[in-house]
Length: 209
Image (cartoon, rainbow, N blue to C red; front, side, top):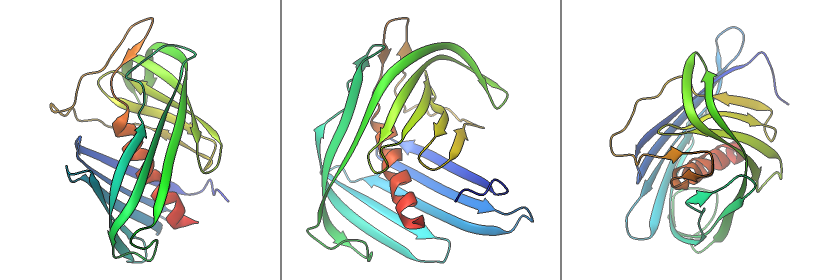
């Protein structure tokens, strides 16, 4: 059940295309922490990825998986177009109770472009050249609306699957990140980083079930 008296803060730290960190914490109305989770993701550059995590109770784990991208997001899509991501991962090493060496799983996500937004204000900041995508989560089948803006990435999200809304409150440009552009017809740029975030979010959601 979603408690509207909770204040939850998520911090996404994009380091590079091969490294990402996440931390999140929820506090009650008395400012007491009642839940928390942190994770790191690293692309090892050899076809494997390593995820490490620590939860509110001090439990932690690390897994290295072989990852095969079977279908990647299209780099150029237009309004009404559906694009999808599908990968297969196989555990090669683990210190976690979740899974054993050799276990195989699939991750998938489908997104449909539903609109373009020239300019939008989120948390007091103005972002331009934005795209609105309907995002179907593979584990709940709920449809969220994700708003991505040029040179920034995800700035707002309505999450029907977990009953929460997301909005970007701060952003520091990273010069190593590729520039994305948008015109009235199409959106250009890779969505792989969003897929990486999605995996971290899914892992967090599973740990809280």
